[in-house]
Length: 197
Image (cartoon, rainbow, N blue to C red):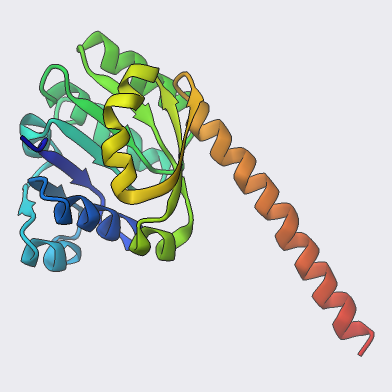
């Protein structure tokens, strides 16, 4: 029997990622702040949930792909957040690019509630999300990573376990630093080319 997957955040990346899970035959529950963003995936068979709380109560696996660390904090904590309302034994996967310290905080709070938390930021942009070819960098307990591997494989190709909670976010930070250096180099080369005619 396919696990029920809850997906929170249906922006440019999230919508494609959730679509791959739906295509594989999983029941998919969705929530996003702007309901119109969910229209196309609802037409494909996903089920709308009015709140994070409602979604959390029903899903076996909850995936979040939201904007900023502040958004991550908002959906995970508080009386109507994921941790307070998820079913015992549920897997919580945050795929947002966020803070390693927040990933650790989520993992600790999840453990107290008999939940499994993974930080799993991605690289590959909207094209990678559309094609299901994302690189996924995962932190958390190894057993939880292995249990969620089939779900990760629906969204990405290069899926790497990086170590304990926060390790996925640290790896993504390394990725961003490497990219930033390359972008600066390209900008300098363009400026130099322009100046020299």
